[in-house]
Amino acid sequence: QALEFLIDEHKKVDELQAQLFGGGIVFSDITTEILEKNIYGVDLNEESVEIAKLSLWLRTAQKGRKLNTLSSNIKCGNSLIDDPNVAGEKAFNWQKEFPEISAKGGFDVVIGNPPYVRAELLGEYRDFFKQHFNVFNSASDLFAYFYELGSNLINEKGVMGYISNTFDKTTAGKILREYLTTQVTFEKYIDFTEVQIFEGATTYPVIITLNRNKPGESNQFNYIKIPKASQSSVIDIYFHNSVNVEQDTLESDSWAFLPVEKVKIFQKVRQFPVLREKYG
Image: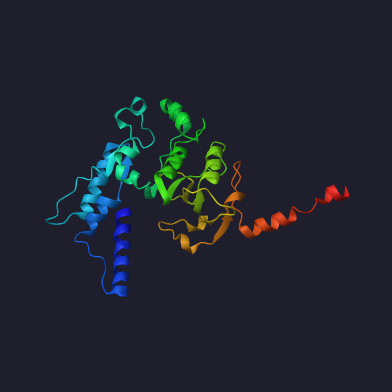
């Protein structure tokens, strides 16, 4: 889908330039150009890597076109661990594996669906996470470490987007909440917790998009709650009401997504004494 999106966006830009300037950017093979220079991926499972390559080959295959091996773009490894003593041959160093991206300061976009693995199943990797990740918590699910990794992989103008299980109120998610609210800037938060969007699995997912910059004062992001009534094979988030939430109102103990207008009302009310305190 990432490839399809980039191809479609290029076509739109090309058409717009043709309208404005009488000619668009012409590449002899835009699909290959995008595939070789804009799509990167890492997965722990070798079969998943090969399936991803095959899918891209089938999408771009044309008579007379030489197939790229994609071995420089789609790789197998442990995204979170770069130490061979811990991960063995699956240890993965992002800077060494993608030096051209590292030289540019990171990726423009990072997207992912981090695996749902509970803390008690992390076993031998727990000590590594404790030493190398700020979001470490003895009860943290695996996806917490992917959030920190992803935010460090994007460049200063880059955007990260993840779909994961919700952690807005869980005890295990407290350190992750604190990290995200203080170290990155939220752009959008889409709450699917009332809708089962993965067939055959009971999950409570959210989609979060963010950038790596520390949040400024009163940074606002878009919060969208998808109601249970929207249960269907296709959900258009733009049909649902959204509210603006100030990031600095999110407390690490629990996130409450209050619209800016309500927060202002609460703040005014809190300026006055409680009636019981005033009148006994």
